[in-house]
Structures are given as C-alpha cells and as structure tokens.
Amino acid sequence: MNFGRIFLIKCLLLLFPKAKCTSTINIYKAVNETALLSFTAENMHETLWTRGNERLLQMKDKKIKYYVEKMQCRCKVLLNGTLRIERLVKEDSGIYKVSAYDKNGKLKANETTVLIVLEPVPQPILNAECINKTLYVKCTVKKTEDQMFTIELTQDKINKSQTNVTEVEFTTRHSGRYRCIVKNQVSKKTTEKEIKCPVGQLDLYLISSIAGGAVFFVVFVILLIYCIRKKKADRLEDDDEERMQIHQVDREMAMRKLPQPPSNPTPQQTCVQQMPPPQPHAQQRAVPPQPKPRTQLQAQSQLRDRH
Picture 1 (cartoon, rainbow, N blue to C red):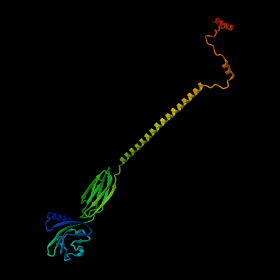
Picture 2 (picture 1 turned 30 degrees about the vertical axis):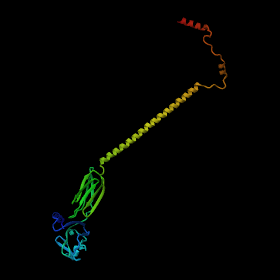
Picture 3 (picture 1 turned 135 degrees about the vertical axis):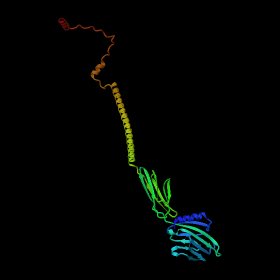
Picture 4 (picture 1 turned 120 degrees about the vertical axis):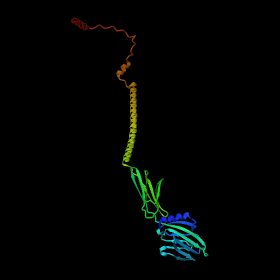
C-alpha cells in the first residue's frame, strides 16, 4: 500500500477524531515480524476486523469466520479479540478497524489501528576525503522504493541529520571518530570509523625543520654549558698549580735564608772564626802613600818627549 495514502488517512483521523472511531493507534513493524492488533473491551460476544473497506474475519460466540483466504491473510483472532498477523509484508500496511458487540448487539468497542510495515534500514557506508587540510565526510545508504529512514552523521559535538535522503555529508577540519547512524521506527544500524586528515607535504617539511632546529638548539646549549664548565675547571686547575709553585718557591727561599751549620767545621772555617773582628774606621791608622817605582817615572818622561 502506498504510504502517501496512509499518511493522508492519519491526517484525516487527526482532523476528525469523532468520526465513527473512538481511538487511533499507530503500530510500526518490520518485514517478516508478527503484529498484534489489540483493543480493550469486556463481555464481547461478536468481534469484526476489517482492513480498509474489506472484511478480514469475524469471531462470534468463539467461532471464527474468514472473509478472505486464511493463507493469504496470514492472520487469526485470539479469544480476547486480538488480531495476530504473521510474516508481515509491506502490503499488510493499512488501516485496521475492529468493532465489538455484546450479546444484546450493543457496541462495546470501535477502534482503529494504523499498521505500517517497514523494511529494516541498510548498513550505512562511511567515507572521507582530505583535501587541503579540509576533511569531507560522507555517509551513504542504498535506498529502496518507499523506504523511509533518517541519517545522522556525528562527531563529538557535531551532528547533522536528514530524513528520506540517500547521503549526508559535511566538511570539517577536525579529525576523530565519526559515527554514521541510519534508523527508522523498526531498526537502527551504525557504522563508526576513526578518520584522520594527513598532514600536507609542506607542513611535514615545516614540522621536520622545527624539530631539527629544536634538536640543534638543545645540542648547542649542552655543548655551551660543557665548554663553560670545562674552562672554569681548567682555570681552577691552573690556579692550583700556580699556588703550589708559589708555595714551593717560598719554601725554597726560606730554606736558603736559614742554612743549617755543619756539624764538623773545616780548618778554613776554623781560621775564619778565629780571626779578630774588624776594628772601627776611626781607630784605623792612616797609611802613607808609597813612592812610585822608578821604571814607571822613566816611561812617563819618554812619552812626554815624543809628544
């Protein structure tokens, strides 16, 4: 049955709620499932189920009468008046009405049930493409005729959904886990994928250059600290050596200034020690100059004659 007609009937039922029926129930079922259409009534003697303008079956005094072929209907009525439909197909969708009477023929219930049979949603396909640092994410499904579902594409706080479409896509610059959800009133399927936008070649070179520069800077700082500490250690070592040399020279000078007397003096040292101390200059006797030798006088006179 066409779903457009079903929705039109539903709208009419909502606009005219007092038209023959007292209540309307919507039931969604998947293909190949079993539907139970029930109602509430007491002291029932006769129950009549119809679909649209077609009678399906009647139960009177616990006896069932079929107005359609039983195998084609794939339906039966329970003792409480509930209609059971097995192995549902999309053609089972429609408006089902039930009327219940007591033994006096008084109407006890008159209810309407809208049965909508849907196919399970297909498995979504999640694809992504990275172009110039922009991530294009797309969720697609294969839609059959008269199939209705909603597609949701989510990633953290990003959420985009559309109904009765075959694909949903959006662009972003955020990598992460994306989830594509396809659902309807009877089924739900999900596809998840971790999607990352690879870095461009230029960005890769830039990152490599920055990393290389950082490594070079760290090595340079380490070498600079090593050189400063080594130079300081060499300077301290030179100062220690110089201090030791000065200390050694001082010791040698002290040893030279304070010689130790020999234990057995020599005869010369004995004579020097026995010499009398020198007399003061005032007490020394003036010595008269001695005459020059004669030979020196003759030589001086000869030199004068030559000149």
